Length: 209
Image (cartoon, rainbow, N blue to C red):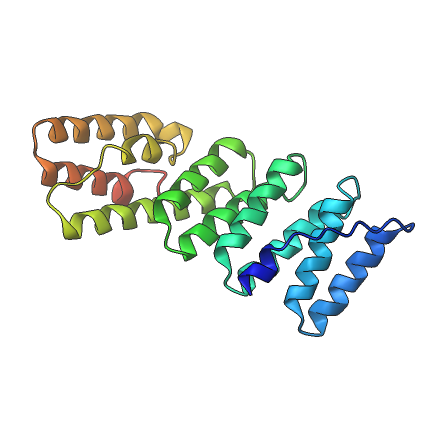
């Protein structure tokens, strides 16, 4: 089924109002329980008629269908394409956040954290900024917990820059101070102390709840 989802539609309808026809066809196919065919029609619309008012909606809906089918990898790719191809779409911020959630569902936590950070920096005025920040900190916490269970030597260095981008501007100085404290513990090979500070950041830093 994944190959079918990933198949690019080569046909390019040329009849007038074909974008509307494809949208109606996709809705009908989805209602009939034919998600693969619905996605094909939506992708045909988005890629064949990029100037259509329905193009970004079609790409977003195709991603939603793939996400609902638990094809998280391809759904994330479609969400990313939406805000890349249509950066000024009203759904660009939603697409960026949903891409992070798909990566999280798939267990790709480090990629999900990067995607959350991208969202926070790219869409600081989004109405969903607070929920995105909460989810990002939860992912960071899961990464720290996961890395703290199986090994004494933890590659925590890469989490510092990622984590710093997750906090509200007013609490960023406090977060940076804690990261510097953790950095000193790492330099002294006091890894468990470093873990304690990182967990203090994600558990108790104001603005990270």
